[in-house]
Amino acid sequence: MSSLNLAAIGNCQVSALIDEQARMVWACLPQFDSDPAFCSLLNDDPDPSRGVYEIELADFDRAEQKYIRNTAIVQTILYDKHGSAVRITDYAPRFNLFGRVYHPVMLIRTMTPINGWPRIKVKLRPAGEYGAQDPTITHGSNHIRYVLPDTVLRLTTDCSLSSILEENAFVLTEPKHMILSTDESITDSVDKIARDHFGETKKYWQNWVRSLALPFEWQEAVIRSAITLKMCTFEDTGAVIAAMTTSIPESANSGRNWDYRFCWLRDSYFTIQGLNSLGATKTMSAYLRYIVNVTYEAGDEQLQPVYSITGNADLTERIVDSLPGYRGMGPVRVGNQAYVQIQNDVYGAVVMAATQYFFDERMLEPGTEDNFHRLEVLGEKAAELYNQPDAGIWEYRGRKRVHTFSAVMCWAACDRLAKIARRLEIDDRMDYWQKTSDRIHADICEQAWDENKQAFTESFGRPELDASMLLLNHLGFVSADDPRFLSTVHAIESELRRGDHLMRYGVADDFGEPENAFNICTFWYIDALAAIGRTDEARDLFEKMLSCRNKLGLLSEDLNPVTGELWGNFPQTYSLVGIINAARRLSCSWEDTL
Image 1: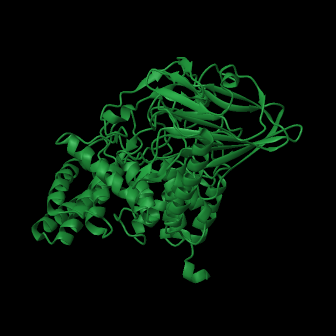
Image 2: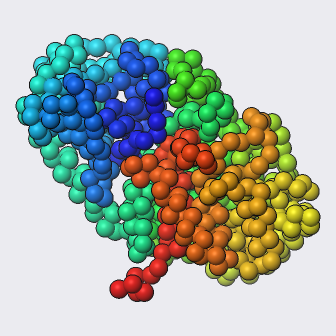
Image 3: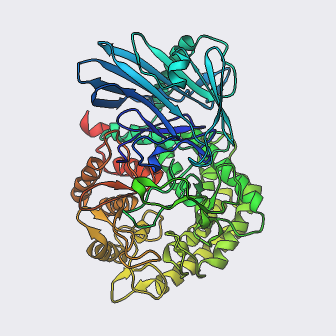
């Protein structure tokens, strides 16, 4: 049965998910949002005819799996019942070459016997059209070509080709390598390329980790989260995907199955903010270029909440019948209809992200007055739309309301524009945006405050609670000691807390009442507790959340608050940002401990 106890590898061009027995259960090629060549994560057939990449050990007994320290390289050891063992090393090459970062469409596996004579079988069955189509296969002297509808893959290997083509078992007596890439000839020996790429990739990631500004406590968790977030960035454009997968349900048989292989401007802002707090400024700069391009392309049209990783606006959603879904819990969706939704908070996300240009001295190209005036166009949209109905942060498909979070993010756009104008010493525009933000702030405080609940609620004039209100202090809307924020936190924890976890909301939506907790909401709660001085409680909850990570230190979008089982798309960047932000807020300082 499929589970989310998976390792993630990647190089900011491609990624793959690998289960405990080194089966590559998910890999979209040649980029994050492509057709998955390997898709058994969404097919629980014990021996699927296609979409498989597996090293099967005869008489398998048990497995061990871990990352090489401070890298995106995973190693799995398979043991048979007779004491023989094989170590499988998986990674996507990424390293500096000729003054740039080399990150090809390439996945490399090395099988090394470490005890006895392990007998293995390679099952390599890439699929096309979401598991519906077999490839056309040809081969040469040391390679096999798999022609798929959208790409051509070439396996270059020093294994016996007939053993792979016919799936015959063979005894592994020395290291063997498998380089799966696009249809380009490899001119050097497979062994040399695999060894050289391994060494350079290991060095790249370990050097990258050394550049991070880490908190004193919980460094392992922060490092693993940061590496995984970095892997979820698309180097070519700077986009950040919400997750590597599609259609892992938020809870069992819920129908809440969505495609997350795209760039939500809101989520990406928080992701970049998390990486930036660690000093990963190149990733931040690349994302800022992405949102600038997206906003310029949109022109005067409404900004979408989500775009493709290349900036494409059309994400038409469809259901594919060729895959039964995670544990048979379909549907499997490709594309995301949220792109046509109105989510007014997006203006705040873009302006808040772009604010970095004007205040961060590390930026090579600081923000100019012309840049500011371009942002003012978005600010005017925010000021116009803050009190208009939208689908909200949770992307309700069946209704629209004036959602408080969207309104607050629109206020944040105007507030940041006032701060930028002050920085640029444009006094008249500073006054304009300050008055605008003050007006919006006052209206939100009147419309979104519920006297009976003693809380800011989900939407104007309604009593329902929403975990996103835990962000009011983080966004600068209210201070942590504001009685309204204190009582809002109390109301939310009274109604939305389930054990050690938090729900997004507690009422039925388009798909009924939500069953599982939303991990980022628990991290928002931890952050709010720390802000209002309940630090011991926050630390305790944070430790409990870390214990919910899978064995490789990764988190998905949701979890069952009773069993702790992970659900939802994986690995979820929002959840990993929560780890980084909580660790930085809660950790004792280096000076206090050394």
